[in-house]
Structure formats: structure tokens, C-alpha cells
Length: 106
Length: 106
Length: 106
Length: 106
Image (cartoon, rainbow over all chains, first blue to last red; front, side):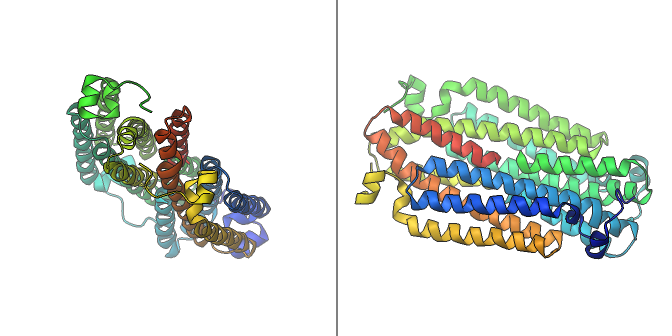
């Protein structure tokens, strides 16, 4: 049940996020800029609450990136492993659950 | 790639948690008792911080139940759907990702 | 800076939530019922995703109760301690920060 | 109940974090570097789970920075406002509770 035919690159690496790579890169660039912004706010003695508001915005943005990567991972890497009935399907399911637990508790 | 042969009950319902049902029921019973405990703490004018400590313990316990159910769901329901190549495998992957997002953001 | 004149009960216990006690008790009763509901869903072999949806609803409800209690605690218990310049103001600030950390990480 | 005599800078800005400013700046620099690291991992087609592990490390680090800022804010900005009995003490308490809620739910 491969939802969409993997691109050559995707098939080579098997990573689900490859098809969305540029979007992920752009989002990470933005988050990096926001982090630099917080550094500047502290450096310029901004009000604590304004800094906290920015931090919550970044953790939210990071969580959304993580949820996207996880969705891609389940749909591609985990699905491919289950379909090809290889032993690593169990490994990939264990890894996915551990990653979900870290996300919920970080 | 069904990791373990499904029990008759499991096969009938297809739910991964069935094999661990009694453990889940016992954990829910305990959480219910803890919730009643908080009700009593408030009723008896306990100190706010002590009540907050109990609430964090319950949300942690609930998150652990959810992570267990999710792990079972991925290993059984989602895996079965992918293996049998039915259309609902995509539905189950969508549902799983939405459930993970709710968990991360609740 | 006591925002509102403490009631006799509040003054006696000093807990901020006393003025809202009945509302908190009603909310805890509802959460207890929802927890029992999850026990029943598992007992009756409901679909994993439906159970996960209910768990997220409860953790959200519990977090909202905790945020309310914390708000009351800061406005009354912590504020009273700071105003009366007693040594336990530092203790109360430490406790509040520890409770916030547990909430963020549970 | 001012826990420690505010430095000249702190008194001027009233922000609690000023006394720890360099440590906060160093932590933000590190988080910025970690974010760049994730950008590189995606750019170099790293495995999804390894990227997710890094994201959880960053959200955890950001939450710890936020909890530190909040603790400083309560001990200085909020405490000063309550002690000087100015009207903004209520404003600062409202802001603090809103910031805590964002942290818990981001």
C-alpha cells in the first residue's frame, strides 16, 4: 500500500520527507531566524513576557515540523518496511513509538 | 509483517490493545481513583501546590496509557491495514497522525 | 496588592481557589466521569483512535484545571506571602516554579 | 520581599533575567546552532528518526530557557510590582498566567 509512487531520490533514500524537502528547509531557516531574534531580545533587555511569547511560537513551529516529518515517516519508511516484510519493520515501529513519546514529553 | 499472531479476539476486533486489555483497565481504574483523590483534596481545602502535583501525575499517567495504545495501534491495526493493502490503510495513517498531533498539543 | 478582599474561608486557608471551589469540584467530577468512560470504551473493545481522542480531551481538561489553580495560587497565596514579607514568599515562589515545570513537562 | 538586591542594570530594566543574561545568551546561541544542525540534517537526507530526536532536544532546551525566564520574572518583575503595590501587579500576574498557559499548550 505505497500511497504515492516514491521519487527516484525517495526510493534511493526511502525518506518520506524528501518530496517536501525544500519546504522543510525553508521552515527550519525561519525557526533559526526566530531563535536569533530571541538572542537579540535578551541582548537588548526586552521584557520577559515578550521573550516567552516568542519561545512558545518557536516550540509550536518545531512541533509542527516534527509532526510533519513523523507523518511522512509513517507513510513512507514504515509503510515500505511493512510491505516488504523485512525484519526492520519491527525496528521502525519501535523507533516511531519512541520518537512519539519523546515529542509528547519534551 | 504481523509481529505476533493475533488472538481470536484480536482478529475479531483487530485492536492491538486487546492482548493487554486487563492491564489497561487496571491503569484506568487507578487514574479514576486519583481523579477522585483530587476532588477530595479540593473539597478538603488542600494546599494548591499539592493538588497541582497530583494533576501532573495524572496527566503523565494518561499520556503513558495513550502512548501504549498508539504503539499497539501502529503494530496491529495500521500494520494489518498496510499488509492487506486495503484502502483504509491511508485512512488509518491519517488518523494515527491526527491522534499523535492531539497528544503533542493537549 | 491583594487584588480582591479574601473571604473568611480564604483568609483562614489562604488558598486562592476557595472562592471557585464549587466550579473546580464540578469540573473534577466531569473528568472523573470521562475517565470512567475510557475504562468502559476499552472494556467494550472500542476503536483505539476513539479512545485516544478521549484521552486528549481529558489531559486538556486537567491542564485547564491546573492553569486555573496556578493562576489563583499566584494571585492569592504567593501575593499574600510577598505582601506580608514573610520568609515563605521565597518558598512559595520556588514551589510555583517547580509546579509550572512539572506541568510543562508532564 | 525582594529576594536579592537588584543590580543597577536590573533596577533600571527591572527584568529578573539580567543577572543571568550571559548564560541565557550562550544557551540561545547553542539552540541556534542546533537548529542550523537540523537544517543540515534535512539537507543531507538524514534519517527521519535522527532528525526527530534532535527536534525533541531543542524543544526541551527551549522549554528550560522559558522556565528559567519565568522563574526570574516571578521573583523580580512580579514581586517588585506586588511590593510597590502598583496597579500593574494585576497586569503582571495576568501576563504571567497567560505565558504559563502558552508554555503548557505549545
